[in-house]
Image (cartoon, rainbow, N blue to C red; front, side, top):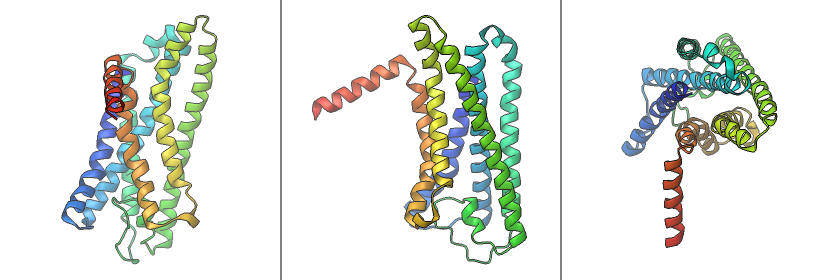
Length: 255
């Protein structure tokens, strides 16, 4: 799990560094511009890190499943070589997915202006600027494939947690059940945050769409999960929990 947490931290750092610095630069310089190549690079790296994060969260779910449901086979199924291969597969799949989307999106001719109305380059907003019907359908097909892949990962996670909870409830001691649940809760919280923000962004009704709301939604799913994930996993550390409790107690006591 520590090895996968390292990889997850890298994806979170990559997501933040892809969008936030440019947005801060534009805000400080009072400008809203980005170069064409800069937009393509931003879209590629954001899609790359987000895709890799989804696959890593799925692999981490498999890690928890094996640890709780098949503990005697953990060393065989998740040895150091197997972990390295799975992490490499997650990064490679994310890279391929990002490359396909970037190449497909930026091969479209743009004839509806060049104003995105977002603080970073997003595929749906770039598609709105295109006037190529065939290219638009090609990218929609790629998006549908990516969504289907993400749905498959989500179904796998749900199925795995059903098996995990069944195994945990069969543990006779309360202390054993508590320990097993405590190892799963951070990952479950990270998955819930990732899926809920992404789903809200994709399924937001067009009737309630507005530039300001689109901006908030984009920030919600692109910034909040990568920023909160380190806190979620750090709260397993007793010293950090004690420090946070002391800080909150001091804050409310002063109030």
